[in-house]
Structure formats: C-alpha cells, structure tokens
Image (cartoon, rainbow, N blue to C red; front, side, top):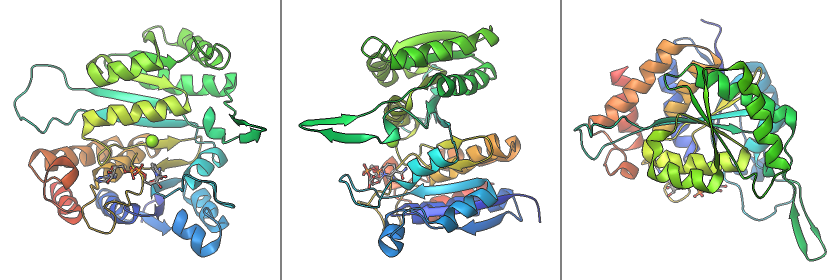
Length: 337
Ligand code: NAI
Ligand code: MG
C-alpha cells in the first residue's frame, strides 16, 4: 500500500464510461492506490434530492485528490439543483483551473516545420459570473460579476509561477477592460502586479475577443494564458480544438489542499451508453493530478506519452475519425504503459 488516496466521482452520461478507464490507468502507474467512489450530479439528484450529498463532500475531504467525470445540468432553473462542479470549486476553494492544450496533428505524420501548439490556459475558477448571483428586477434579468483583488492576485501567482517554469516564459493576460474597466481593471492590474516578482516572464495583454481570434488562427504564439472564469472557460474550448477537441481536453481544478481532475467535456448525452466516448480527456486529466497534486512527474509523463502514442498509432475513437471504442483505446494505452 502507498499513501495515495483517490475519490472517484463518475457523475452522469459518458462520465461513467471514461472515468473507470482513467482509474485503471492511474492504478497501473500507482499500484496500491486507494479508491473511494462517490456520487454527484443529475442522476444523484433525481435519486436522493441532492446533487452533491454530504457523504461525497466527506469523501473529497478525506482523499484530497478527486477524479470527476461530468454531470448533466439542465439549462433551466430546477429547484434544489445547482451544478455540483461549480459548488465543489467554491466549497474547496479550487481557485485555479489548469487547461493545457498540446497539438494533436493526426492528419499527417510529416512535420510541418512549425513548432507544435503547446499552451496552458489558467482560468480563475471561483468568481466572475460563476458566482451564480442571478435575479430579476422587474423586466431586467441581472447577473452579477464579482472580481476581487485577492482572487486575481492568487490566480496571477499560479500563472506566473507556471509560466516561469516553461521554456518560453510568456504570459498573456486576457480581459475586457475596455468595456468593463472596473472589474477587469482589478483583474488585469492585480495579475500584472504579481509580475514584479517574475522579471524573466514576458507579459502580454489581449482583449478577450482578439484572444479568441488569435487562439483560432495563430495558437502557436501562446504559451500561458490567464483569464477570468467565463473567458477562461470559453477560450479553453476554442484552444481544445488544436489538441483533438472535446474528447481529448483535460483539466485540473487546483486549491490549497484539494485537487479535482476533470475532462473538459460534459456528459455527452448524444453518445452516452454506446461505448464510443473518447477516454483520452479523462486519462490526461488523471495525468494532471499526478503532475500538479501528487508531484509525480515521471508517472504523469508516462501516461501522456502512452495516450499520444496510442492516438498516433491510429487507435482512435469516432470523434477523431477512428473506429476504436472506449475499451479498445484504453487497452492500447494500458499496453503502452
Ligand atoms: P458535451 O461536452 O457533453 O458534448 C459536446 C460534444 O462533444 C458532443 O457532440 C459530444 O458527443 C462530444 N463529446 C463530449 N465528450 C466526448 C468524449 N469523451 N468523446 C467523444 N465525444 C465527446 O457538451 P454539451 O452537449 O453542451 O452538454 C451536455 C451536458 O453536459 C449538459 O447537461 C451540460 O450541462 C453538461 N456539461 C457538464 C460539464 C461538466 O460536468 N464539467 C461541462 C460541460 C457540459
Ligand atoms: Mg466549458
């Protein structure tokens, strides 16, 4: 036995298909990993009336490391339901959301001569529009967007620290301070102030719409990107296209003592139950848990290499134009480890 404990929350839809695969992969590199399964999400809510039961919160607290699949959230208000992932981010103060994209060029194995896309989006994870303070005032529908100096400084530290350890050492601060000078002004200025302690990191600034255009057209120019909650969410979906899309994109929610790894994708009801979901996003998320929470770099690299090798070898799920199922791709990855 070793000291590593993992709380596993498969959630809804394809979460239940891809998360067990990622657990198998983690157990291969961490034999003796203690696993505790817990429930959250829409199914859990319809069964128990609670989308995030106290037993799940206790299991997260106990383990510290969590692998979360995805949950289905209705896009209308349902009494008693609130997205458990948003709740967990706030409750455990998971203030940084790391979303890396590494280029996956499957169209040709020949090098284009250009450096591959290799970027990291650092998304503030607790504030902005995600505080969920929405209400009606007469005819007006209002959503509050809260940004604090403290939270912006905290995410700035994470972004500069990570940028300073990468070869290119570039950080792009993305905001919309031309339209939102107060809220995004606080964000931009607080992040910039952290830069004084990192003289070797080159700082750039972009408005979010320009950043979206450049992420779609010139992704190689980006190294680390830091932004507010909603902008970071949307930009990371754009960036994910370079890495093979939704089925491949990984994420890690990081706090002081708890880390929750989760693929960027949702519950994918259109393909759930068919055994064709891509497990790569969940498996690469597990690798992020190894790298940033447990600081097990060698094991993290091993998993990432196995995933990319399997895909390069042509073992691909339907979202990447292949015919492999969830099981087949997982087995290939396991055999490469
Ligand atoms: P989605 O990410 O579930 O699906 C978007 C598209 O990507 C679909 O075509 C789907 O088939 C495909 N896709 C997603 N995961 C895939 C995988 N592993 N392999 C291959 N293809 C994959 O987003 P959508 O459809 O907007 O939302 C569906 C549900 O998921 C909603 O209830 C939404 O609230 C929830 N959701 C949950 C998230 C979370 O738990 N963190 C994040 C995003 C959405
Ligand atoms: Mg998203």
